[in-house]
Length: 82
Image (cartoon, rainbow, N blue to C red):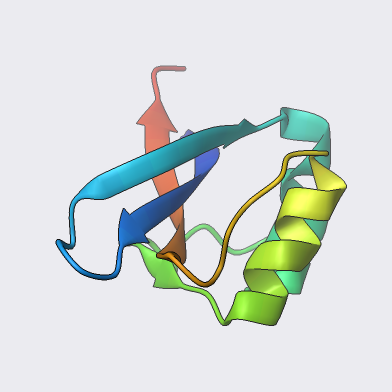
């Protein structure tokens, strides 16, 4: 089974989902490493809460602007049909 990953922000005041940024397949290993996850291990499923510095590193990797003062960010996996 393979997975797609998304960088997702949640509003700190309302806890509602905010910005979503898909991570290209080629950037997933580096994004997982920045998040502190084993790059080859997909058994660590579930939303992974990121420190602001980790979220900024992943955002820089995929070349998007994020606001870590307004949003808490998570790395979220989605299973893909093989």
